[in-house]
Image 1 (tube, rainbow, N blue to C red):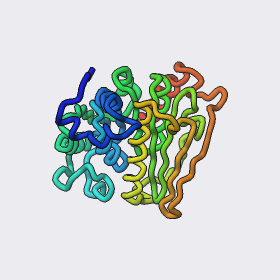
Image 2 (image 1 turned 90 degrees about the horizontal axis):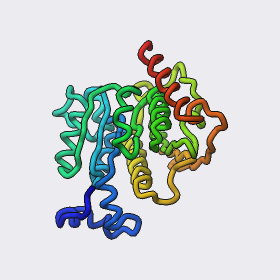
Image 3 (image 1 turned 120 degrees about the vertical axis):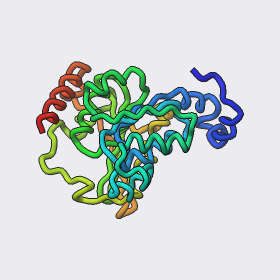
Image 4 (image 1 turned 45 degrees about the vertical axis):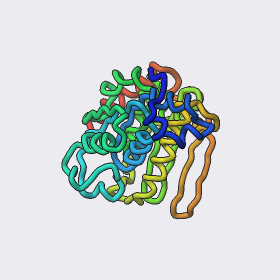
Length: 267
């Protein structure tokens, strides 16, 4: 556990230290925090940069994809020189150059229950920066089973959203059910404004910091949506669903996660 900030730390995080919501003790808590991030794409790019910039001590990144030229329009953590590399490798290089004091653990693996399970105990918050409904459902179930807050974000077209799911406040399944859409739109088919990924990734980082520091007015039980076309934010309140098939208990969450993994393996 870090007990003090060095002189270079004090200089680097001076604006945080002056902020009443963070201060010296809060910066120590950020440095001691461990975040598990799933996805190093459009959302993950802004999220990872701002987590590292905030001085989060340890970040594990899970993504089994490689960098493509079409990613560069919004995935600002990657470079032309890293096209063809695993996204986690490209992201780790960028973060190391940005803040060498952050420990980065890149894992070029698919997000599965058996992959994430051994990592849960060592992390404080799970960040969902994935790009599909099946992975979001899986991460929701795993987070509930592991009793970790899930800060979930999504972006497509000119829209984006952020929420924090927990067993007490309500989970992704409480809000959207458990059925996976058969013909869901994707960024590849519907497009996405790159800057929207930046807005939502930044909001996701803000929420993670709120969870670490236990700040009030967080996103539990709330769905914050951003419409770039209309330039509007919409804040929707939701509650936990009675007998939710996922957050009803840890055992139901694990059962749903493993069932979903089996379906994804057959897809």
